[in-house]
Image 1 (spheres, rainbow, N blue to C red):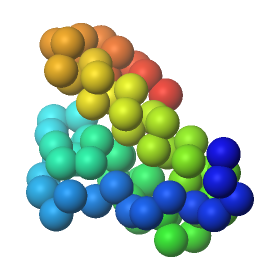
Image 2: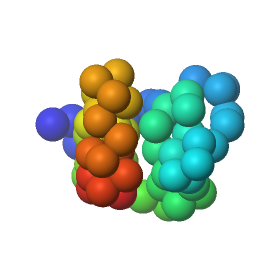
Image 3: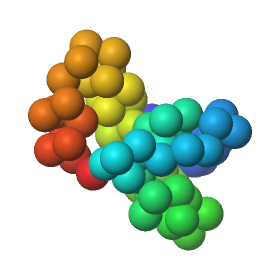
Length: 70
């Protein structure tokens, strides 16, 4: 893992779904708001959670998206 943080995963598709997850980057509103205050490890963890949400969404697993690590 890089000691530097990742680039922001924002895709400028800023719209929250009914679970409070961005339809563009798959971060929660809290994760979006805290992004610039997170250390690199927290940012990488957020990217990982968002990726899991994206995959759950693609597979249609609403339960995983709702109850996954947020």
